[in-house]
Image (cartoon, rainbow, N blue to C red):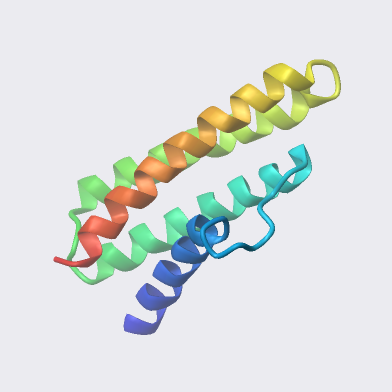
Length: 113
């Protein structure tokens, strides 16, 4: 249980810290979409681990899962429109990543409880 929580926290930290560590950050649309999909997975896993650890309520966990569903749907739309309108796709993906970063920040605050 603690290992899952630690692993989820580690994934979230690594995803957000790449730029500050001087590692290559995703540049292409496909790289950014891949990071976004990985972030959705990390958010889902972290929320489940926090629920099991009684750090968040079931209602909170469900809300996070709903937001992860919305983010995943946004990524799917961005990927679909990338071929015909790359600028709109990039904007959509950026908006999704901003939302995922906010969820990630919230989850990080709940881990310390």
